Length: 480
Ligand SMILES: [Zn+2]
Image (spheres, rainbow, N blue to C red):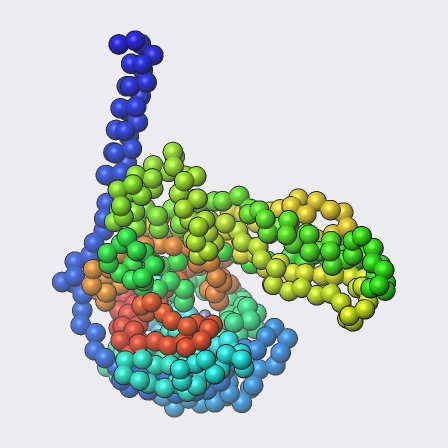
């Protein structure tokens, strides 16, 4: 054999050995089905969720007023339905309709845990109402399903936390550790008056939670096609949020004699330029963990690729870019959501504006987003400005080997037979982001399966899901 060929051959064999070693190092983490507990169907809780859905605690928009009568109705519903929780826990209101309950634990030396859920819901568009199977705020219960706005997002979590608490209080239970329940009333419009103010109160009082649990991750049996069992994704990090305004001012005039380029034309081209490219991809720690956890159960080819990211990273990213949800996990996204120009059909407007909404990956910043937009447009006639009012940089992630993650993992294995539990990155935004700067661990998860219709048509949840959620919170409350 000639020496160069020998070198190539030896290198190839070594490479295969490394690839295979890494591939076989990915271990599947099946949980023993026998360890799971029986979950009783809770029909009384279903009736309570139905009642909660019928109260229209809608957040209409940043600058639009809420219907305070509905929020008062919700408060009265909580007081009437969960009397022990109101009698035995300390309660405080924030901006009238957000609440914190404190359940004192036996050992007050331990840092407390925080359970969160929000009480507001998004509106139902008038045009969509007729497409619902049952009226959107009916709270209709049909066999195993509870229908209506808020069934998934997020009244089921609020109800499940309160049901678990009330039932445990009926049994004279006291938690080992102090728990706070935080119920915000404006999560759907960024939580500025609810969770934000509550988090400031925590900071003033120097309360640093050891663990914060909020909505976000769920159980899925549909999306991970190659994994033959339920996958529970627990978010360990969350993307950031920034709006970037772009505007063009060019004197307009009569539409019968247009210039070569108008403000609308320039703005339009700028938008196209931004949308043609994506910001550089990043595989953040939560996404890396998700890939590794699920890869162990996928086809051999996928397994080789994910186990050997040092070689196949680009290939893996390419695969993720093909689907809008997985693309959002590896890219900071940018999409125009507001476009404004023109007042009359025969007047060329002198100004045209648009707003990009961007969700920022951990590892990139809002300044990176602004620079990307400026470079992509590369046109001095276009002004680019970031909004600061709703700005939230991407969160730092909770490590997946944190005891809180392991606690949720083992609880989830108890209530979902044969489940695969994995970290992941939340691509939306939740109230819990206000707690990330001063909490040890913030995780996002509720054990509902294949949730349907949230923010859309036919939002609904199974009575089985609600019952599982109550069992889940009871196990969390019973933790030390
Ligand atoms: Zn929500």
